[in-house]
Structures are given as C-alpha cells and as structure tokens.
Amino acid sequence: MTIQREAFGTLDDGQPVDCYTLTNESGMEARIMTYGGTLLSLRVPDRDGHLADVVLGFDALAPYLGEHPYLGGIIGRYANRIAGGSFSLDGRIYQLTQNEGPNQLHGGELGFHRQLWRALPQKTRNADQLVLHYLSRDGEEGYPGDLHVEVIYTLTSRNELRVDYHAQTDRPTVINLTHHAYFNLGGGETILDHVLTLTAERYLPVDGLLIPTGELAPVADTPMDFRMPTTIGSRIHEQDAQLLRASGGYDHCWALDSNTGILAAELYDPGSGRRLHVYTTQPGVQFYSGNFFDGSVVGKGGRVYGKYAGLCLEPQHFPDSPNQPDFPTTVLGPHDFYQHSTIYAFDVA
Ligand code: GLA
Image (cartoon, rainbow, N blue to C red; front, side):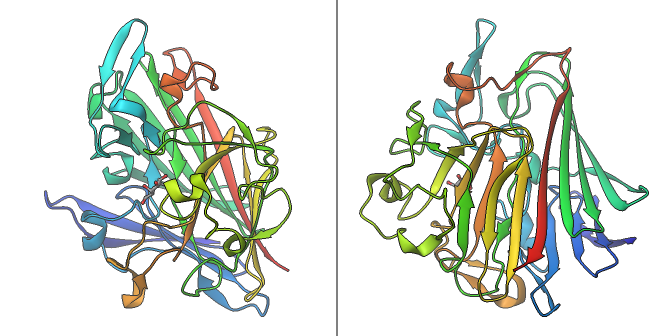
C-alpha cells in the first residue's frame, strides 16, 4: 500500500492543487485531487487481471476549472435539486443561488466540487486513506451556518474504495453530500450494455424540472424496475414520461429498501467482467445514465463523451427534501454529527 503526492497545477488565484495516488497490493489505484476532492481516475482489474480506468474525467486541471457536469467531484452542501433554490428553516426563508433555471443543483455555482480541500494522507493497519477537510462558511451559496466537512477516501486491500462523510455545523442548516463519479466499467462508447441492479421497490417520480413530485412510486411494471439484473439499454428508449423528462434516460432517485449499509446497487459489465457493488448508509441513490452528454465534453485521452458515455450512482438523501416534509429530514443542528458512508467494491464475474 502506498500514497504518493504530486502537484496538479494551480488555481487562477495561484493556490496549488495536489493529486494523491493511493495504490493497494493488487495494483488497484485511486487518484484524487484537492480541487473538489475529485476522483481523477480509478484503475481496477478486469477478469484477466488487466487494470483500466473506470471513471470519466480529464487529464489535466484546466478543464476541471471550466464548465463540466460534475465529473468525479464531491457534491455539497446539498446534492441534487432544491426547488426554487429556497427553503424555510425555523421560520426563516433561505434564498440559495439558482444555477439550474429557478432551482439549485448540486450546491450552486461554487459547490463543494469547486472548492479547494485540505488534504491529509494517513495509513491505517489495512488501508491507505486520504482525509479531506473543507470549511463552508455561513452564507456560502445561501446556506446558513459554518459547516466543517470531512470526507475520507479509503482504498482497501479488498479492492474497495470507501468514502466516509462527516460534518458539523454551528447553526441549523440542511445537508446532503454525495459523490459524482461517472462509471464506465468497460471503456466502451456507452454504458447501455452494463447490467444494473438496484435494491429498491420504489423510486421518486419527477416533474418537468426534475423535482420529485413527492410520491414514492412502485417500480413494478415500469422501466424503473431494476430489482433483477437488467441491461441499462433494454428499456431506456421507451416512450415513458419519466424517461422523456430526463432527456431520454434515467436521472431519478430510488428509495432504497434499507439504509443500514446493505447493498444499494450492483453494476456489471459483461465485456470486461468488472463488477461494482455499492453499499451505503444513505436512504436513496440517484441513478443518472449520462443523458445530457452531447459530445461537447472531451475527456481523458481526447475521448469525446457522447450520450450515455458514463453513469452515476449517487448515494444521497432525497432531492428537494428541505421542501418535502414527508421525506427523511436533511436538517443538521449544532448538536448533531453528520455521518454517512458509501463503499464501491470491485470484483469480477
Ligand atoms: C446530476 C443530475 C443530472 C445532471 C448531472 C450533471 O446527476 O441529477 O440531472 O445535472 O448531475 O450533468
């Protein structure tokens, strides 16, 4: 097990960005940079033992500083959408920055994926870790309270990448942290041949602006049913109102059957044999099938990312929870300790 640090460029204001490489004894490797706490690459073996990068991203810092769809970043203070970019808490209305029409998406213009994190590499008995810290100030993007955030990436000897999220606030606020890695386990043009399983009986239908309607609808007899392993492309082109709202694909939150750290999702690429199991303590998982890629993003090695080039499995609380009293609460008070974990476990089959 090793951790290595190297320079990865500088921000416009001159602050240096570092990249840390975590490697385990089977050669699995995760590279993380301090800007956005972004997972730059993740090399995992296929069924013949060949390592390849299974996440989308860029080769250098510069494109991460420009417009891009949250490739590999840590998302906060509130992942996903908040309707109207506002919510009320303890009788006060908070107006957030609006960066997707009237709504806020993924924490606003300068969400946590656009912040510089302080990094501390450390070793435990079985694993290498990168501990990242960020202090989100009271008022940032409209949110109340100074929020101290810690995100710990751990690469284990069992080919797992674990992400632990901790936070504390000095005033009541709302919080929803997630990770925005785009997976493509085989390196093909799209992820339509990947086989997905989601341990969810219900999902959250959305309106035309991708805000949940508030209903938890059964997946049975809909293209949202991934209770059994299902090829992603098999129903994605159906003339289904929910798929059409998300620009011809999936961009929805599934309500997990349990949030006790059990299996949330399984993703399998029959071509390479690579398989990913996602375990989480979160109540939901947003499955986004990369529908908005239109060829304008040119990623690693000059690869043009077209529609469905990669997919996100974002463990999180339900979108727009601050405005949906029936959803599990996302309020964090000054005496609370925010704690969530997600494990991305890789093997072959
Ligand atoms: C999220 C959202 C999608 C899209 C992507 C980035 O996962 O749910 O609607 O905005 O981020 O393109």
